[in-house]
Amino acid sequence: MAEIDVFDGHNDAAQFIAEYTPSGRDFLLRSETGHLDLPRAREGGLVGGLFALHAAPEHPPENDLIITENGYEVIYAETVDPLYARQQIGAERLALESLIRRSAGQMRLAIDVDEIRAARAEGAFSVVLHMEGAEALVGEFDYLHRLHAAGLRSLGPVWSRPNIFGYGVPFAYPRSPDTGPGLTEIGKELVRTCNRLGIMIDLAHLNERGFWDVAALSDAPLVATHACAHTICPSTRNLTDRQLDAIRDSDGVIGFNLSVNDIRADGHLNDDTPLDAVVRHIDYLVTRVGEDRVALGSDFDGAVIPRGIKDASGLPHLFEAMRNSGFDSESLSKFAFDNWLRVFGLTWKNSSKLLKPSAGGGSQGQALG
Image (tube, rainbow, N blue to C red):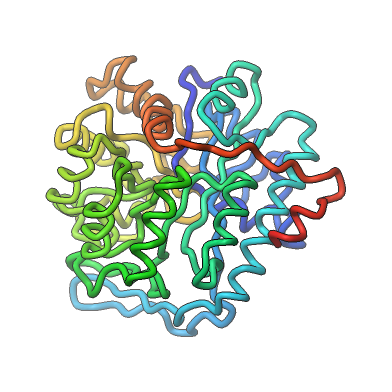
């Protein structure tokens, strides 16, 4: 068993669970597909994480990858229809609720730091709801208030495509994250509303101008749940040193993304990425922003990760490599668990009590769906 308890800042597992899609995996059983299920989480020391609710495009483009002379560019579908997005977000949320009920206490929906700590102490796995891309809000915030009451504690205004709230940063290498306009006026109001509710604002997938718009508006620490350093890997998805400094100065957190094409200096999508290269990248971030402000944001089930880790069960290999590189027990605990809970504690103010759904899904679930 793993020696270090881990809270992960980002995974995409909700899109692949059996409760959401007939072809999905049973999260309670060990699988060799994908990266994350409860048995592999326990093998790797994972005690909880942010589970992303994400609306995939209804009609993705057929030829979405352009190989350039020295890199790549990914072409994404146009903005997702808001009503279609709301359907998907609602279905994923209800699927997670159903899975948690079926787990018979092995998994818990957590809405505050005390609940995460209590679940950890009692051997249960914490699920914290995150929404990646805010299309489902349909330009009004009543739905956001209802999602917050149902447990939503983290939100990324955009994914890597534009919507009415702002401009996502498209995947490309080598390129600056300064790819266009930032937040719209309603996007700025979304930031203010999240601040009032105590919903963490995720800067991952937001372009550089949008990042600075949030930094100017938000009264909460700046957080990117899954990103890396642009100085090492000049991918649009990575953060410049100036952005990292802003996260440091706000007492925020960067969740280190295990996506190999954002770790490697060459940007290659190659899982044969040595763990010493992974650790060097983490060390750069820690040196830049401090050991209190770097955590794990794996992107399990949403990325190609290093072969030496393979899936959630392989996280002890990462921590062993970090320990061999000079990280002590205290710094490892901060990276693995403590730093997320610190920033949650600074952000999740005024948390309302969860409206519990009934055993059959309940009227609250139907209203949110």
